[in-house]
Length: 271
Image (cartoon, rainbow, N blue to C red):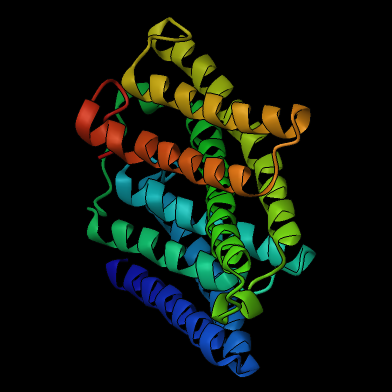
């Protein structure tokens, strides 16, 4: 299984490399190859997780290796779903390196299959964990769109139309991408918190215990809630929304990793 996962990792790296090469030389053959490799690797990755589920006998979302691997897979298919529906120029160039980075983290993490602790032996595990990670994948896409927006906006503002200006979508298209990603990611994040609360009531007798991960999940939720509120009421668009998407995703990553490693708590089993 370790060799299989390494092959999947190198598939993502190869797809990312082709996207980056296409970004620089604009040879469409590299983009076609990148898309084909990404799609094939996404299928292999799905097979890997199914195989791990069969071997473990439970949903493979209980270790850092499994959680980050699923995160990368969800981001891959989230991107592909957007690619089929929307034409966002060179989006893959920014998304695929982040997927590869996530896969590197998963590759360097222990892939040992451990017995589930009593608190995780629940049908809520696949529901809560998968929803939360899929939410993160769409927030990650919004993060990539935010980076692209700031790069494009910087060139337009300085009136120095270099490489990014000709290769990135319009500011309007990028702002629309940001909104679509948040419109999917935020409700899923909300549902993830709700299902986690129900699970906590079942496992520990309380819906909310102000555990560090619960607290940071709420902080992250408020960041995105504020962003969406400002978009709907004040009309926040463009640079502000892009910056908030980047800040929000940073908080989401800290909730996923930072809390487990630095703050501990009853959710620190993901390590």
